[in-house]
Image (cartoon, rainbow, N blue to C red; front, side, top):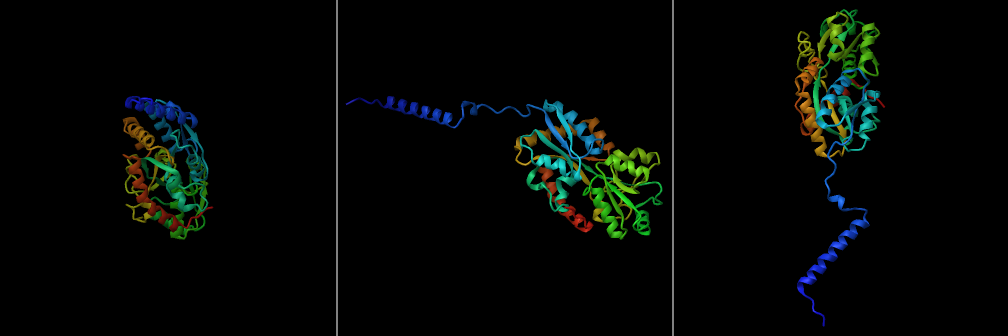
Length: 340
């Protein structure tokens, strides 16, 4: 009878087990490379989709941040403008992109939150398809009027639109954006029958406002401050809870007695990514956004746009969305706006 030494049996068993494991790896198309660390992120350029036309405040901020963040990430960040349909086209492109951290969104609250209450056929779900990364800044807007409008304050403007029912046009940089919702709310609550004119971006909206094709609009300080200073536009008031640092002498609409929720809320600018993007990548991007926005020159640039810089993170941004969601839903329902 053959002699089986216990140690030899053990070695034989371990050898067979190793061979079986190797065979399993080959059979599944896997190799020992699976045990190697994945390539560090990022290892190629990152595309940042801005769902608005070039030249607007969102586009300008995206380019400022991309330049600074590229240094920390060690890879270029390429801006890709995809304007149209109130940010839907660009945001949908992000929602359908691979969740690998190489396609990001720098958008506004409309495409990342409010469109879901406005559109009956939205091709993406902000909650299901977009992962929040970082709320860059709160973006109050200034309500401006063409000099031909005989009103200097919020209450005076309300009286004017009532007295000129059906004759006043207001602009927006996209259907469903805050300028549209606030204008629609004003028209409906005052029974003013104002006409809404939607533009493919903020810059062309301001050009028509300067030319008198529209009479009023909510716009960013970046686009209208120089025109206000030159007397080409009149600043009526600021949305949100606080005055803009760059327009300290312009009171909020709430200060002027327009205390409706519609005038007290403000939009925001933020980074997002396709849902399913790994959490470590989201945190890495968030850390680079934080570093960029804390640079003195960037912080000053953002303040000059009339925005309030935020200290955010994926978790804090998610919490902010959860808090604001019912407010925007009420505003849209009150405006009566509904789109296909």
